Length: 217
Ligand code: MD3
Ligand code: FE
Image (tube, rainbow, N blue to C red):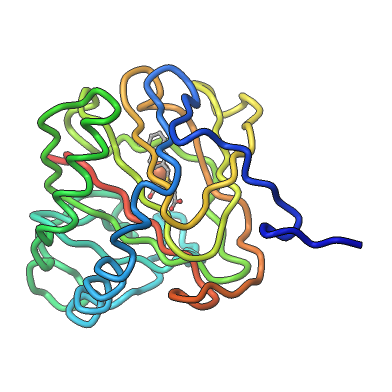
């Protein structure tokens, strides 16, 4: 039996793949700044620690979250919203680091969204078994702005659905350093993340981190 460079996987992807109208995958786009991103994430999450939020339905999310920017996405018994204060500390979220803003703007520009200036970044942390069920991102005010997502650490199976929750999702593998820009008609599609599998990443260990840059206000 042979195990190749990618284990069970062969990376046959082109540097840039169109996933749907308005959705562009930039393969390994963030890889060259992985050390900078890891160091910055450690600083951010020592100020605003990861926590498992509780949904309005009373369920503890298996994904741990933090935020940076002018506002952060939160959920609790009262609902989902963007809040200028971290409910755990009572303090404003840490500002969006220059390296984050620069990465998000460069990626958005590659996908045709020039001048993207996010005001919020949701930081998701997955451990083996963590998953995110199918949802739409619709707490933002302006759906004409894209969302830029950055995947780091362990690979995941992203579930890319359609305009209806009942549309059967496609399964798309997202690897360390992959960046996806979700704009135009794909902005309101249903999506989620399948249960994270065990593994080890040289920088992020047994975890996956996902950054989503948003214009929330
Ligand atoms: C498609 N995060 O934070 S990133 C989320 O991997 C979220 O943590 C996932 O869904 C994660 O809301 C998926 C890819 C993504 C993010 C936002 C989207 C895809 C999207 C918004 C609209 C359409
Ligand atoms: Fe989402």
